[in-house]
Image 1: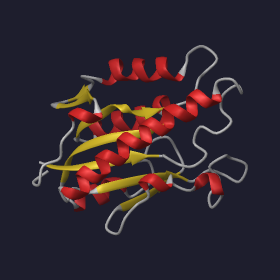
Image 2: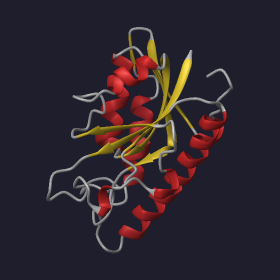
Image 3: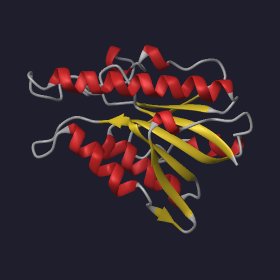
Length: 189
């Protein structure tokens, strides 16, 4: 079973301005924590020579992630290295009208470790689609985040999706939500 790390939409402006001024520091801190965990997993994946795949959202002109804007850039702490795959998307589903499935198939990937942003949109949709396409999925339980909604805080959304997605399946393929510290890449992932 070949394993790949899939990091979704960890871009400069992913949560910028999405909270009330008094809440924005909490969102920014949560994102920084997620980035640190994903960076740790990136280093492990690269050391084990497992594929690292970065997904980058290409927003329209007026969007905070507008293609080519400063906010669109991937966070420098987890910037791709030579040999990493970068996939560009325009919708929540990282597989929709992208070459992600082909890039994973070329590398004989059967297991995805997924983290990034935004939990209830791109993470949820991509995790569910990956399982439906036949991948085993490990959701990095403390490696994804989002912004508050009018009814729920970002931490409530993350907790809800960890509970909802853990055990979700299609056929014989399942999602397991696992903390970053409990994920290990081996030299034969």
